[in-house]
Amino acid sequence: MFKQKCWLFMLTVCIFMACNKSTTNINFPDPNVTNPEKSPISDKQVSSAVQGIILDETNKPVTGATVKCGTATVTTDASGSFLFPKVTVNEVAAVVTAEKTGYFNGVRTFRIAAPDKLQYVQIQLLPKKALGVFDAATGGTVTVSNAQFTFVAQQVLGADNKPYSGKVSLMYAPINPERTDFADIMPGDLRAITKSNVLMGLQSFGMMALELQSEAGAKLHLDTSKSVSFKMTIPASLQSLAPATVPLWHFEDSSRVWRETGSATKTGDSYTGTVKYFSTWSPAAPFSTVNFRVVLQDADGTPLSNVSLHIKGNSGRYSAGHTNENGLFSGHIVKGETLTLKVAGRCNVAVDSRNIGPFADSTSLGMLRLNIPAAQYIHFSGAVTSCTNTPVRNGAVYINIDGVDYRYLVTDGKYAIGIIRCNADNTTANIRAIDADTNKTSVINMPVSTNTYVKDLVACGE
View 1 (spheres, rainbow, N blue to C red):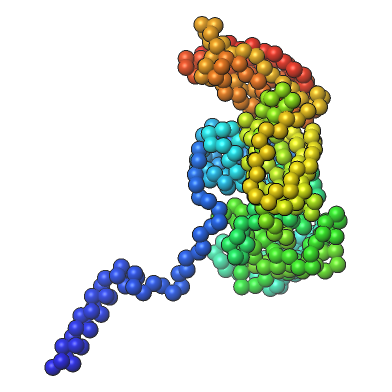
View 2 (cartoon, helix red, strand yellow; view 1 turned 135 degrees about the horizontal axis):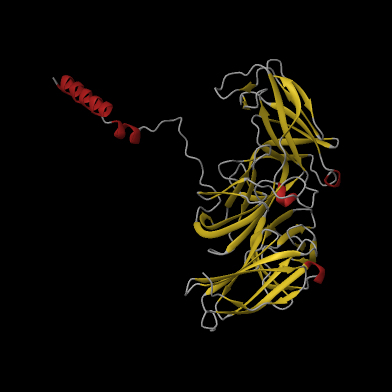
C-alpha cells in the first residue's frame, strides 16, 4: 500500500511539473543557453549633441550619406556635414555610423567628454571594390594589393544559408596604421575586449575590411564551420615592432569595439592566420590604458573646439579623438609611456606637438594653452545684445565654417570662438546669435579667411 501511494505521489509531481513550464525552467535550466559575461564597458546613457563630417577616400565631402547615432538618423548635406541636436548615447562608447552605396560602412566609437555638449566626429569612408573573383563551388585564392585569401570549396552561403554556386567577388579595403588619417578611417577607437573580458587598447599592424558579393551584387557570407586562410603584409614602418605572434581581432557589430578572435603568426614581412567570417580584421597587440582628460585653449584662453588629438607612446601605441565645444577631450591613452601629444585641425595638419607623461593612473592635465599659427587660425569675439540693447544672459552663438558648427553658450553678453582651419582660403562664415529668453535670432554671413574678427551681434530677428 505504501509503495502504491508513493508511486501515485510521484506521478502527481511529474504531471504538475510537466504542466508548469515556468517552474521546470527555473529548476532545470537549458544546458545549451549560456549567460555571456558582463561587458567591461559601462552601459551608462547620457544626453549629447553630436555633429561631424563624412569624407570619401580623397577627403572630399560625401553628400547623401545615411548617418545614425542613438535612435536618430540624418542625411549629410552638400558639405558632408551632419548634426544630431540631442541624442541619448552610451557615455563611454557612443557610436556614429555612416552608410553610403559603394562604400564600407564607417563607424566611430567615442567617449562623451561632457553631457549635453556639442561633440565632433569625423569619418572617412573606404570604397568597396571587387578586387578578386573565385568560384564558390571549388574555392580558390584571391590576391589583392597587400594580402592573399584562400577559400575552400562550398564555403560561401547565400541569404538562405545554403551553399552559393557561382562566381564570388571579394570586396576589400586595406587600412594602413601608418596613414596620418588612420583615426578617421579605422572603425571604432582602438578599444578592444580580450578573451578574458578585459578592456584594452590596440596597436594595429594593419587592418582588412572584407565582404563577399554575388554576381548580382547580393551580399554573401561564410560557412563558419570552414576557415579562410589569409596572408597580410605588415606595413613597412611597423615590421620591426611586429611580434612573432599576436592576437587576431575583429570589429564587433553589436558592441562597436574590437573583439579578440584567434591569433596571427609573423612569416617574413607578413602575418598569416585564418578567419571564419568577414568583418574588419586586424592582427594587433593589446596594451593597458588609463583615462585621460585635457582642455585645449588658445593663447588668450578661448576654447579650441572640434580639434583633433593624436596621442602616441614611444612604443608606437596610439589613441586619438576630438575636443567638444568647450575644448574638452576625454579618452584613453597608453599606460606608463612617454607620449607625444599632437594637436591638429580637421585636415590632420599638426599645429602643436609636445611630450606628456608617463601616466600610471587616470589623469587630467587641466587647461593647456596653445600658440596656433596665425595662417591656420580664425578668432571671433564680440558682444551679444538683445532687442532692448541689453546683454544676452541666456543664449548662444553658432558659427558655421567649412560645414562645421562652432558653438559658444552666452551667459554674460559676450562670446569668443577659435577655429583651426585647413587653409587660409577665403570662405563665408554663417553666424547665428540666439537669445533663449526671448526666442529671438539673428543670422549674418560674412567673408573671412584666417584672422581675428571682432563682431558684435544683436539677437533680434524672427
